[in-house]
Image 1: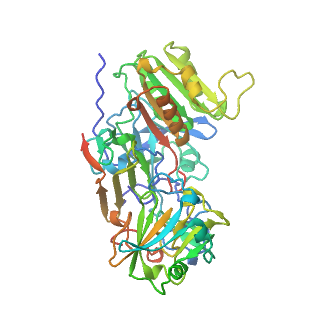
Image 2: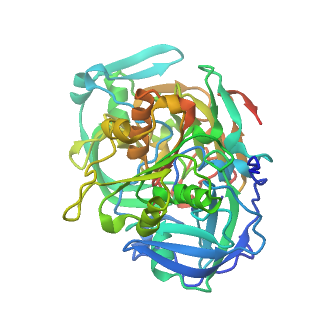
Image 3: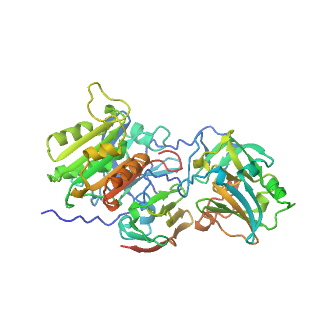
Length: 255
Length: 206
Length: 88
Protein backbone atom coordinates (compact mmCIF):
# COMPACT_ATOMS: atom_id res chain seq x y z
CA UNK A 1 0.00 0.00 0.00
CA UNK A 2 1.34 3.39 -0.86
CA UNK A 3 0.68 5.88 1.87
CA UNK A 4 -0.26 9.41 1.02
CA UNK A 5 2.57 11.81 1.55
CA UNK A 6 2.62 13.93 4.63
CA UNK A 7 5.49 16.33 4.78
CA UNK A 8 7.28 16.13 8.12
CA UNK A 9 6.60 19.19 10.26
CA UNK A 10 9.31 21.70 9.33
CA UNK A 11 12.16 21.46 11.81
CA UNK A 12 14.13 24.61 11.95
CA UNK A 13 16.60 23.82 14.65
CA UNK A 14 20.17 23.68 13.49
CA UNK A 15 21.65 20.22 13.68
CA UNK A 16 25.16 19.03 13.08
CA UNK A 17 25.78 17.15 9.86
CA UNK A 18 28.92 15.12 9.30
CA UNK A 19 30.37 14.38 5.89
CA UNK A 20 30.62 10.62 5.51
CA UNK A 21 31.49 10.37 1.84
CA UNK A 22 32.25 12.58 -1.12
CA UNK A 23 31.41 11.67 -4.70
CA UNK A 24 32.93 13.47 -7.66
CA UNK A 25 30.08 13.85 -10.13
CA UNK A 26 31.65 16.11 -12.78
CA UNK A 27 34.69 18.41 -12.91
CA UNK A 28 32.76 21.14 -11.09
CA UNK A 29 30.23 19.16 -9.12
CA UNK A 30 30.51 16.99 -6.03
CA UNK A 31 27.99 15.22 -3.88
CA UNK A 32 28.40 15.27 -0.13
CA UNK A 33 26.81 12.36 1.73
CA UNK A 34 25.88 13.52 5.22
CA UNK A 35 24.99 11.86 8.43
CA UNK A 36 22.45 13.90 10.37
CA UNK A 37 21.82 12.09 13.66
CA UNK A 38 18.35 13.37 14.50
CA UNK A 39 17.09 13.46 10.92
CA UNK A 40 13.35 12.86 10.81
CA UNK A 41 13.00 12.20 7.12
CA UNK A 42 12.07 14.25 4.12
CA UNK A 43 10.09 14.15 0.89
CA UNK A 44 11.73 14.13 -2.53
CA UNK A 45 12.15 17.73 -3.70
CA UNK A 46 12.65 19.37 -0.34
CA UNK A 47 15.77 21.28 0.59
CA UNK A 48 17.91 22.11 3.59
CA UNK A 49 19.76 25.17 4.80
CA UNK A 50 23.40 24.78 5.73
CA UNK A 51 25.46 27.21 7.75
CA UNK A 52 29.22 27.57 7.84
CA UNK A 53 31.07 29.41 10.59
CA UNK A 54 34.64 30.67 10.19
CA UNK A 55 37.07 30.96 13.08
CA UNK A 56 36.45 34.69 13.32
CA UNK A 57 32.74 34.07 13.75
CA UNK A 58 31.81 35.00 10.19
CA UNK A 59 28.84 32.95 8.97
CA UNK A 60 27.44 32.10 5.59
CA UNK A 61 24.18 30.31 4.95
CA UNK A 62 22.95 28.62 1.80
CA UNK A 63 20.08 26.38 0.70
CA UNK A 64 20.61 23.09 -1.16
CA UNK A 65 18.14 20.58 -2.49
CA UNK A 66 18.31 17.11 -1.01
CA UNK A 67 19.37 14.84 -3.87
CA UNK A 68 18.90 11.59 -1.99
CA UNK A 69 15.56 9.82 -1.64
CA UNK A 70 13.95 9.40 1.78
CA UNK A 71 14.84 5.70 1.56
CA UNK A 72 18.55 6.49 1.98
CA UNK A 73 20.10 6.64 5.44
CA UNK A 74 22.50 9.44 4.50
CA UNK A 75 21.47 12.81 3.12
CA UNK A 76 23.02 13.77 -0.22
CA UNK A 77 23.65 17.36 -1.25
CA UNK A 78 25.00 17.99 -4.75
CA UNK A 79 26.99 21.20 -5.07
CA UNK A 80 28.20 22.95 -8.18
CA UNK A 81 31.31 25.07 -7.80
CA UNK A 82 30.49 28.65 -8.81
CA UNK A 83 33.60 30.62 -9.67
CA UNK A 84 32.83 33.77 -7.73
CA UNK A 85 31.09 31.88 -4.99
CA UNK A 86 31.83 32.07 -1.34
CA UNK A 87 30.41 28.78 -0.13
CA UNK A 88 30.42 26.46 -3.13
CA UNK A 89 34.21 26.55 -3.67
CA UNK A 90 34.62 25.57 -0.01
CA UNK A 91 32.15 22.71 -0.27
CA UNK A 92 33.59 21.42 -3.54
CA UNK A 93 37.33 22.03 -3.06
CA UNK A 94 38.00 21.99 0.68
CA UNK A 95 35.51 19.80 2.52
CA UNK A 96 36.83 16.42 3.67
CA UNK A 97 35.21 13.32 5.07
CA UNK A 98 34.72 13.87 8.79
CA UNK A 99 34.05 17.61 8.47
CA UNK A 100 30.94 18.92 10.12
CA UNK A 101 28.65 21.87 9.52
CA UNK A 102 25.25 22.99 10.64
CA UNK A 103 22.13 21.99 8.76
CA UNK A 104 18.41 22.46 9.22
CA UNK A 105 15.33 21.22 7.47
CA UNK A 106 13.67 19.73 5.55
CA UNK A 107 12.11 22.84 4.13
CA UNK A 108 9.51 23.39 1.43
CA UNK A 109 6.62 21.00 0.91
CA UNK A 110 5.62 22.79 -2.28
CA UNK A 111 8.12 21.31 -4.71
CA UNK A 112 7.54 17.69 -3.73
CA UNK A 113 6.61 14.47 -5.53
CA UNK A 114 6.18 11.02 -4.09
CA UNK A 115 5.02 7.70 -5.49
CA UNK A 116 1.64 8.28 -3.82
CA UNK A 117 0.89 10.86 -6.52
CA UNK A 118 -0.83 9.28 -9.49
CA UNK A 119 -0.23 10.03 -13.09
CA UNK A 120 2.67 10.71 -15.41
CA UNK A 121 5.64 12.63 -14.11
CA UNK A 122 7.46 15.17 -16.25
CA UNK A 123 10.80 16.41 -14.93
CA UNK A 124 12.77 19.18 -16.61
CA UNK A 125 16.23 20.05 -15.36
CA UNK A 126 19.04 22.42 -16.25
CA UNK A 127 22.53 21.90 -14.85
CA UNK A 128 22.59 21.44 -11.08
CA UNK A 129 18.80 21.78 -11.05
CA UNK A 130 18.78 18.01 -11.46
CA UNK A 131 19.34 17.56 -7.72
CA UNK A 132 15.76 17.66 -6.37
CA UNK A 133 14.51 15.79 -9.43
CA UNK A 134 17.10 13.09 -8.79
CA UNK A 135 15.62 12.66 -5.33
CA UNK A 136 12.25 12.06 -6.97
CA UNK A 137 13.66 9.59 -9.50
CA UNK A 138 15.67 7.70 -6.94
CA UNK A 139 12.62 7.46 -4.70
CA UNK A 140 10.57 6.18 -7.63
CA UNK A 141 13.21 3.58 -8.42
CA UNK A 142 13.58 2.41 -4.82
CA UNK A 143 9.84 2.02 -4.43
CA UNK A 144 9.72 0.19 -7.77
CA UNK A 145 6.80 2.25 -8.97
CA UNK A 146 6.43 2.37 -12.75
CA UNK A 147 4.64 5.72 -13.14
CA UNK A 148 5.28 6.89 -16.71
CA UNK A 149 8.09 9.40 -16.31
CA UNK A 150 10.08 11.69 -18.53
CA UNK A 151 13.31 13.43 -17.56
CA UNK A 152 14.40 16.16 -19.93
CA UNK A 153 17.85 17.28 -18.87
CA UNK A 154 19.80 20.18 -20.33
CA UNK A 155 23.55 20.33 -19.82
CA UNK A 156 26.37 22.18 -21.53
CA UNK A 157 28.29 19.03 -22.46
CA UNK A 158 28.28 15.31 -21.85
CA UNK A 159 30.98 15.71 -19.25
CA UNK A 160 28.72 18.05 -17.29
CA UNK A 161 25.73 15.72 -17.10
CA UNK A 162 25.37 15.09 -13.37
CA UNK A 163 24.54 11.49 -12.37
CA UNK A 164 24.90 10.63 -16.05
CA UNK A 165 25.66 6.93 -15.71
CA UNK A 166 23.12 6.38 -12.99
CA UNK A 167 20.36 8.05 -15.01
CA UNK A 168 21.27 6.02 -18.11
CA UNK A 169 21.18 2.79 -16.14
CA UNK A 170 17.89 3.75 -14.54
CA UNK A 171 16.21 4.37 -17.86
CA UNK A 172 17.72 1.29 -19.53
CA UNK A 173 16.16 -0.88 -16.86
CA UNK A 174 12.77 0.78 -16.87
CA UNK A 175 10.63 1.07 -19.98
CA UNK A 176 8.39 3.56 -18.21
CA UNK A 177 11.23 6.03 -17.70
CA UNK A 178 12.34 8.08 -20.69
CA UNK A 179 15.55 10.07 -20.45
CA UNK A 180 16.12 12.85 -22.95
CA UNK A 181 19.39 14.76 -22.75
CA UNK A 182 20.14 17.92 -24.61
CA UNK A 183 23.74 19.15 -24.79
CA UNK A 184 23.78 22.81 -25.58
CA UNK A 185 27.45 23.75 -26.06
CA UNK A 186 29.49 20.70 -26.92
CA UNK A 187 28.44 17.31 -28.19
CA UNK A 188 30.54 14.15 -28.52
CA UNK A 189 31.17 12.72 -31.94
CA UNK A 190 28.24 10.72 -33.15
CA UNK A 191 25.80 12.43 -30.80
CA UNK A 192 22.30 11.97 -32.17
CA UNK A 193 20.44 13.72 -29.39
CA UNK A 194 19.32 17.32 -29.07
CA UNK A 195 21.91 20.05 -29.30
CA UNK A 196 20.02 23.13 -28.25
CA UNK A 197 18.30 24.79 -25.33
CA UNK A 198 14.96 23.36 -24.34
CA UNK A 199 12.32 24.97 -26.51
CA UNK A 200 8.67 24.57 -27.34
CA UNK A 201 9.25 22.21 -30.25
CA UNK A 202 11.34 19.89 -28.11
CA UNK A 203 8.72 19.83 -25.39
CA UNK A 204 6.00 19.15 -27.95
CA UNK A 205 7.98 16.29 -29.48
CA UNK A 206 8.95 14.60 -26.29
CA UNK A 207 6.62 15.69 -23.50
CA UNK A 208 3.39 14.14 -22.30
CA UNK A 209 0.39 15.73 -23.98
CA UNK A 210 -1.84 17.79 -21.68
CA UNK A 211 -4.63 15.18 -21.93
CA UNK A 212 -2.47 12.85 -19.86
CA UNK A 213 -2.35 15.39 -17.01
CA UNK A 214 1.33 15.03 -16.13
CA UNK A 215 2.67 16.53 -12.95
CA UNK A 216 5.48 18.80 -14.06
CA UNK A 217 8.56 19.86 -12.11
CA UNK A 218 11.12 22.24 -13.55
CA UNK A 219 14.36 23.10 -11.80
CA UNK A 220 17.41 25.01 -12.97
CA UNK A 221 18.60 28.48 -13.90
CA UNK A 222 15.90 31.11 -14.07
CA UNK A 223 15.86 31.59 -17.87
CA UNK A 224 15.43 27.85 -18.47
CA UNK A 225 12.71 27.58 -15.86
CA UNK A 226 10.78 30.60 -17.10
CA UNK A 227 11.03 29.59 -20.74
CA UNK A 228 10.07 25.96 -20.16
CA UNK A 229 7.08 26.81 -18.01
CA UNK A 230 5.88 29.37 -20.53
CA UNK A 231 6.18 26.85 -23.39
CA UNK A 232 4.33 24.20 -21.42
CA UNK A 233 1.47 26.58 -20.70
CA UNK A 234 1.37 27.46 -24.42
CA UNK A 235 1.23 23.74 -25.19
CA UNK A 236 -1.87 23.48 -23.06
CA UNK A 237 -0.68 22.39 -19.63
CA UNK A 238 -2.62 24.08 -16.83
CA UNK A 239 -0.48 26.44 -14.81
CA UNK A 240 -1.10 24.72 -11.44
CA UNK A 241 0.31 21.44 -12.78
CA UNK A 242 3.70 23.08 -13.30
CA UNK A 243 5.93 23.52 -10.27
CA UNK A 244 9.18 25.41 -10.55
CA UNK A 245 12.34 25.96 -8.60
CA UNK A 246 14.79 28.56 -9.87
CA UNK A 247 18.47 28.43 -9.01
CA UNK A 248 20.60 31.51 -9.13
CA UNK A 249 22.39 34.18 -7.20
CA UNK A 250 20.11 36.88 -5.93
CA UNK A 251 21.92 40.14 -5.47
CA UNK A 252 24.56 39.31 -2.97
CA UNK A 253 27.66 37.52 -4.11
CA UNK A 254 27.22 34.47 -6.30
CA UNK A 255 27.05 31.45 -4.04
CA UNK B 1 25.50 32.49 16.43
CA UNK B 2 27.06 31.87 19.84
CA UNK B 3 27.94 28.24 20.10
CA UNK B 4 27.98 27.47 16.39
CA UNK B 5 30.68 24.92 15.67
CA UNK B 6 33.51 26.14 13.49
CA UNK B 7 33.53 24.73 9.97
CA UNK B 8 37.11 23.60 9.54
CA UNK B 9 38.97 25.61 6.95
CA UNK B 10 36.08 27.88 6.01
CA UNK B 11 36.93 31.50 5.71
CA UNK B 12 35.18 34.38 4.17
CA UNK B 13 36.64 35.12 0.77
CA UNK B 14 35.73 38.69 1.50
CA UNK B 15 38.96 39.25 3.41
CA UNK B 16 40.74 40.79 0.51
CA UNK B 17 43.38 43.49 0.57
CA UNK B 18 41.18 46.52 0.72
CA UNK B 19 42.12 50.08 1.44
CA UNK B 20 40.51 50.22 4.85
CA UNK B 21 40.02 53.95 4.95
CA UNK B 22 37.78 53.76 1.90
CA UNK B 23 35.69 50.85 3.00
CA UNK B 24 33.06 51.33 5.70
CA UNK B 25 32.89 48.85 8.58
CA UNK B 26 31.59 45.41 7.72
CA UNK B 27 31.95 45.91 3.98
CA UNK B 28 34.15 44.12 1.50
CA UNK B 29 35.16 45.19 -1.97
CA UNK B 30 33.78 43.53 -5.06
CA UNK B 31 34.63 43.97 -8.71
CA UNK B 32 31.21 42.62 -9.69
CA UNK B 33 28.11 44.77 -9.77
CA UNK B 34 25.46 42.62 -8.09
CA UNK B 35 21.87 43.20 -9.09
CA UNK B 36 19.32 43.49 -6.34
CA UNK B 37 15.74 44.47 -7.11
CA UNK B 38 12.47 44.39 -5.22
CA UNK B 39 10.57 43.56 -8.37
CA UNK B 40 10.80 42.84 -12.09
CA UNK B 41 12.93 45.22 -14.16
CA UNK B 42 10.69 47.80 -15.80
CA UNK B 43 11.34 48.28 -19.50
CA UNK B 44 11.11 52.03 -19.85
CA UNK B 45 11.30 53.79 -23.19
CA UNK B 46 13.00 57.16 -22.94
CA UNK B 47 10.34 58.63 -25.28
CA UNK B 48 7.83 57.93 -22.52
CA UNK B 49 10.07 58.90 -19.62
CA UNK B 50 9.49 61.97 -17.49
CA UNK B 51 10.88 63.17 -14.18
CA UNK B 52 8.71 65.27 -11.87
CA UNK B 53 9.27 67.35 -8.77
CA UNK B 54 6.15 67.54 -6.62
CA UNK B 55 5.03 69.45 -3.59
CA UNK B 56 1.76 68.64 -1.85
CA UNK B 57 0.01 67.42 -4.96
CA UNK B 58 1.16 70.18 -7.25
CA UNK B 59 3.83 69.92 -9.86
CA UNK B 60 6.92 72.06 -9.34
CA UNK B 61 8.45 70.91 -12.57
CA UNK B 62 8.61 68.10 -15.08
CA UNK B 63 11.19 67.14 -17.68
CA UNK B 64 11.02 64.93 -20.68
CA UNK B 65 14.10 62.90 -21.52
CA UNK B 66 15.31 65.48 -24.04
CA UNK B 67 14.75 68.29 -21.59
CA UNK B 68 16.51 66.39 -18.84
CA UNK B 69 19.52 65.66 -21.02
CA UNK B 70 19.72 69.37 -21.79
CA UNK B 71 20.20 70.24 -18.11
CA UNK B 72 23.74 70.81 -16.80
CA UNK B 73 25.50 67.47 -16.61
CA UNK B 74 27.85 66.46 -13.80
CA UNK B 75 30.19 63.50 -13.78
CA UNK B 76 31.29 61.95 -10.51
CA UNK B 77 33.69 59.14 -9.66
CA UNK B 78 33.02 57.64 -6.26
CA UNK B 79 32.48 54.51 -4.19
CA UNK B 80 29.14 52.83 -3.55
CA UNK B 81 28.18 50.68 -0.57
CA UNK B 82 25.35 48.17 -0.44
CA UNK B 83 23.76 47.16 2.84
CA UNK B 84 24.26 43.52 1.81
CA UNK B 85 27.95 44.21 2.49
CA UNK B 86 29.54 44.70 -0.88
CA UNK B 87 31.29 47.94 -1.82
CA UNK B 88 32.39 48.95 -5.27
CA UNK B 89 35.18 51.50 -5.59
CA UNK B 90 35.80 54.15 -8.22
CA UNK B 91 32.53 53.98 -10.08
CA UNK B 92 31.78 56.72 -12.58
CA UNK B 93 28.33 58.18 -13.05
CA UNK B 94 26.91 61.08 -14.97
CA UNK B 95 23.68 62.96 -14.50
CA UNK B 96 22.07 66.03 -13.06
CA UNK B 97 22.61 67.20 -9.51
CA UNK B 98 19.66 67.83 -7.25
CA UNK B 99 20.91 71.41 -6.98
CA UNK B 100 20.54 71.82 -10.74
CA UNK B 101 17.05 70.33 -10.64
CA UNK B 102 16.03 72.93 -8.06
CA UNK B 103 17.55 75.67 -10.19
CA UNK B 104 15.67 74.26 -13.14
CA UNK B 105 12.36 74.92 -11.39
CA UNK B 106 13.46 78.29 -10.10
CA UNK B 107 14.06 77.32 -6.47
CA UNK B 108 17.05 78.58 -4.53
CA UNK B 109 16.53 75.98 -1.86
CA UNK B 110 14.31 72.94 -1.20
CA UNK B 111 10.77 73.82 -0.08
CA UNK B 112 10.55 71.14 2.62
CA UNK B 113 13.00 69.20 4.82
CA UNK B 114 12.33 65.76 3.29
CA UNK B 115 11.92 64.03 -0.04
CA UNK B 116 10.36 60.72 -1.05
CA UNK B 117 11.76 59.31 -4.27
CA UNK B 118 9.20 57.31 -6.25
CA UNK B 119 10.23 54.77 -8.85
CA UNK B 120 8.62 52.85 -11.67
CA UNK B 121 7.45 49.57 -10.18
CA UNK B 122 6.46 51.23 -6.91
CA UNK B 123 9.75 51.35 -5.02
CA UNK B 124 10.21 54.29 -2.68
CA UNK B 125 12.98 55.67 -0.52
CA UNK B 126 13.04 58.71 1.76
CA UNK B 127 15.81 61.23 2.39
CA UNK B 128 16.43 64.50 4.19
CA UNK B 129 16.97 67.23 1.58
CA UNK B 130 20.22 68.04 3.36
CA UNK B 131 21.55 64.78 1.94
CA UNK B 132 20.64 65.76 -1.61
CA UNK B 133 21.82 69.36 -1.88
CA UNK B 134 25.38 70.63 -2.31
CA UNK B 135 26.16 67.93 -4.81
CA UNK B 136 25.35 65.07 -2.48
CA UNK B 137 22.49 63.76 -4.60
CA UNK B 138 21.97 63.33 -8.32
CA UNK B 139 19.72 61.77 -10.88
CA UNK B 140 22.13 59.76 -13.01
CA UNK B 141 21.72 58.38 -16.51
CA UNK B 142 25.20 57.09 -17.39
CA UNK B 143 27.37 54.50 -15.68
CA UNK B 144 30.98 54.15 -16.85
CA UNK B 145 30.16 56.33 -19.82
CA UNK B 146 27.27 54.23 -21.11
CA UNK B 147 23.52 54.44 -20.54
CA UNK B 148 22.64 52.71 -17.30
CA UNK B 149 21.32 49.22 -18.12
CA UNK B 150 17.74 48.60 -17.00
CA UNK B 151 18.78 46.05 -14.36
CA UNK B 152 20.92 48.71 -12.72
CA UNK B 153 18.17 51.28 -12.76
CA UNK B 154 18.25 52.71 -16.25
CA UNK B 155 17.28 54.96 -17.88
CA UNK B 156 17.66 57.07 -14.72
CA UNK B 157 18.18 56.39 -11.07
CA UNK B 158 18.65 58.41 -7.94
CA UNK B 159 22.25 58.52 -6.79
CA UNK B 160 23.19 59.29 -3.19
CA UNK B 161 26.51 57.50 -2.71
CA UNK B 162 27.27 58.65 0.81
CA UNK B 163 24.37 56.50 2.06
CA UNK B 164 23.75 52.79 1.62
CA UNK B 165 22.85 52.10 -1.97
CA UNK B 166 19.23 51.15 -1.33
CA UNK B 167 18.73 54.90 -1.00
CA UNK B 168 19.80 55.33 -4.63
CA UNK B 169 16.43 54.26 -5.95
CA UNK B 170 16.42 52.68 -9.37
CA UNK B 171 14.01 53.80 -12.09
CA UNK B 172 13.26 57.06 -10.31
CA UNK B 173 10.41 59.11 -11.79
CA UNK B 174 9.21 61.47 -9.10
CA UNK B 175 10.72 63.40 -6.21
CA UNK B 176 8.01 64.37 -3.79
CA UNK B 177 8.83 67.03 -1.20
CA UNK B 178 7.48 66.23 2.25
CA UNK B 179 7.03 68.42 5.31
CA UNK B 180 7.31 65.39 7.56
CA UNK B 181 9.50 62.38 7.11
CA UNK B 182 7.82 59.20 5.90
CA UNK B 183 9.53 55.85 5.60
CA UNK B 184 10.03 54.28 2.22
CA UNK B 185 10.05 50.67 1.05
CA UNK B 186 12.90 49.22 3.10
CA UNK B 187 12.83 51.86 5.82
CA UNK B 188 9.34 50.74 6.77
CA UNK B 189 10.39 47.10 7.00
CA UNK B 190 13.27 47.04 9.46
CA UNK B 191 15.99 48.95 7.66
CA UNK B 192 17.53 52.10 9.08
CA UNK B 193 15.76 55.35 8.28
CA UNK B 194 18.98 57.18 7.40
CA UNK B 195 21.56 54.59 6.37
CA UNK B 196 25.07 56.00 6.95
CA UNK B 197 27.53 53.24 6.02
CA UNK B 198 30.29 54.81 8.11
CA UNK B 199 28.16 54.44 11.21
CA UNK B 200 26.98 51.04 9.99
CA UNK B 201 23.36 52.11 10.13
CA UNK B 202 21.93 49.10 8.34
CA UNK B 203 18.86 48.31 10.38
CA UNK B 204 16.28 50.17 12.38
CA UNK B 205 17.70 50.10 15.90
CA UNK B 206 21.36 50.31 14.89
CA UNK C 1 18.67 33.96 8.74
CA UNK C 2 22.12 35.48 9.04
CA UNK C 3 23.05 38.83 7.59
CA UNK C 4 25.31 37.17 5.12
CA UNK C 5 22.62 35.11 3.51
CA UNK C 6 22.31 34.78 -0.21
CA UNK C 7 20.04 31.99 -1.28
CA UNK C 8 20.33 29.85 -4.36
CA UNK C 9 16.65 29.60 -5.22
CA UNK C 10 14.50 32.37 -6.52
CA UNK C 11 11.07 31.05 -5.71
CA UNK C 12 8.88 31.40 -2.72
CA UNK C 13 10.54 28.15 -1.73
CA UNK C 14 13.69 30.13 -1.08
CA UNK C 15 11.91 32.50 1.22
CA UNK C 16 10.65 29.37 2.94
CA UNK C 17 13.40 29.45 5.56
CA UNK C 18 12.83 33.11 6.35
CA UNK C 19 9.07 32.71 6.60
CA UNK C 20 9.18 29.24 8.13
CA UNK C 21 10.85 30.72 11.21
CA UNK C 22 7.59 32.58 11.83
CA UNK C 23 4.91 30.06 10.83
CA UNK C 24 4.28 26.67 12.36
CA UNK C 25 2.81 24.69 9.47
CA UNK C 26 4.66 24.47 6.14
CA UNK C 27 4.37 27.98 4.65
CA UNK C 28 5.42 26.93 1.15
CA UNK C 29 2.21 24.97 0.59
CA UNK C 30 -0.09 27.58 2.11
CA UNK C 31 -2.52 29.17 -0.32
CA UNK C 32 -2.30 32.94 -0.63
CA UNK C 33 -4.79 35.19 -2.38
CA UNK C 34 -3.80 38.50 -3.93
CA UNK C 35 -5.75 41.57 -2.84
CA UNK C 36 -5.08 43.35 -6.12
CA UNK C 37 -6.20 40.71 -8.62
CA UNK C 38 -7.79 37.93 -6.58
CA UNK C 39 -5.49 35.23 -7.94
CA UNK C 40 -4.71 32.39 -5.51
CA UNK C 41 -1.27 30.72 -5.52
CA UNK C 42 0.84 28.53 -3.27
CA UNK C 43 3.39 30.59 -1.40
CA UNK C 44 6.02 28.26 -2.84
CA UNK C 45 5.15 29.30 -6.37
CA UNK C 46 5.50 33.03 -5.84
CA UNK C 47 8.38 34.93 -7.41
CA UNK C 48 10.94 36.06 -4.89
CA UNK C 49 12.88 39.30 -5.19
CA UNK C 50 15.55 41.03 -3.12
CA UNK C 51 16.43 37.82 -1.31
CA UNK C 52 19.67 39.19 0.07
CA UNK C 53 17.80 41.98 1.87
CA UNK C 54 14.83 39.95 2.96
CA UNK C 55 11.99 38.61 0.89
CA UNK C 56 9.62 40.33 -1.48
CA UNK C 57 7.11 37.80 -2.82
CA UNK C 58 5.00 38.82 -5.79
CA UNK C 59 1.79 37.50 -7.28
CA UNK C 60 2.39 35.15 -10.20
CA UNK C 61 -0.53 36.71 -12.00
CA UNK C 62 -0.22 40.49 -11.55
CA UNK C 63 3.22 40.93 -9.95
CA UNK C 64 1.68 42.79 -7.02
CA UNK C 65 3.51 42.42 -3.72
CA UNK C 66 1.93 39.79 -1.48
CA UNK C 67 4.45 39.34 1.30
CA UNK C 68 7.43 41.36 2.48
CA UNK C 69 9.66 39.96 5.19
CA UNK C 70 12.95 40.99 6.75
CA UNK C 71 14.99 39.41 9.51
CA UNK C 72 17.61 41.65 11.13
CA UNK C 73 19.59 41.45 14.29
CA UNK C 74 16.87 43.54 15.94
CA UNK C 75 13.97 41.32 15.02
CA UNK C 76 11.69 40.08 12.29
CA UNK C 77 9.32 42.07 10.13
CA UNK C 78 6.42 40.64 8.21
CA UNK C 79 4.05 42.63 6.05
CA UNK C 80 1.19 41.01 4.17
CA UNK C 81 -1.05 43.92 3.19
CA UNK C 82 -1.05 42.64 -0.40
CA UNK C 83 -2.59 39.33 0.63
CA UNK C 84 -6.26 38.84 1.28
CA UNK C 85 -5.62 35.66 3.21
CA UNK C 86 -3.30 32.80 3.88
CA UNK C 87 -4.84 29.36 4.10
CA UNK C 88 -3.08 26.38 5.66
